[in-house]
Length: 251
Image 1 (cartoon, rainbow, N blue to C red):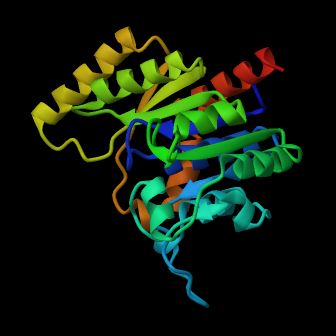
Image 2 (image 1 turned 180 degrees about the vertical axis):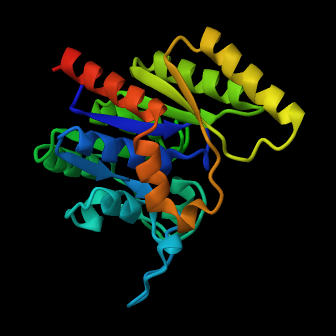
C-alpha cells in the first residue's frame, strides 16, 4: 500500500470532499507534508476571469486551498468535466476518454513529494470511469486503502454494507466508515432512524464506524471554516490516528 488514502463514498453527495479536506488539514497539522488529488470530477463550473465566488469552486480547488497547496489543478484533477453526470458519461459527452494509467503516473509523481496523499473519488465504488473499469479499479491501481463516507440516516445501512462488501471482494483495505448527516434530523422519527442506523452498523460493518458528523447548512459558502472546525473534531482526530497507524503497519 502506498502512503495515502482514498476517500470514497456510498453514493454521491455524501460528504466526500468535506471529509477529504478535513483529513488533509488534520494530517498537515500533525506535521505531515500532504498532497491532494481529485482525479476525476464532474459538474465542474466554467472558470471565469476574476471570479471569486467560493461557492462555485470545484472540489479539486477546494482541496488545494484548504492545505494551501501549490500543485497545479491540472495535476490535482487531470480529468474535469462540465456535465454533472457519471464520469464515463461526462467524458463521452466531451468526446474524451479517462486513462487510469495517466492518473496513476500523476499520482506517483505527486506522492513522491509528500508524506501522505489524500485522494478523493467520484461517486460510489462501482461508478464506471471507463467502459471496462470503475472507481474500485482505480483504487486498486493506486494501491490505496479506503475511507468510506456514508449517510447516517435512513438507507445508510444498505449502502454502507454493500460498499464494504464490494471492497472486501477486491481485497481493498477499509480503514473506517465515516457517517455524515446529509440533512438535518428535525423530527423524532429521523433521530430514531439515525440512531438505529449507527447502532446496526457498529455491530455489522466489521470496520471502525465514526460519527455522525453534524449537518452543516450553507456548506458551499462556509467551506473553509466548516473544514477547520471538523478537522479538530473527535471523529476526524480518531480517523487520522487510524490512517497513521495503518501507514506505519504497511510501510
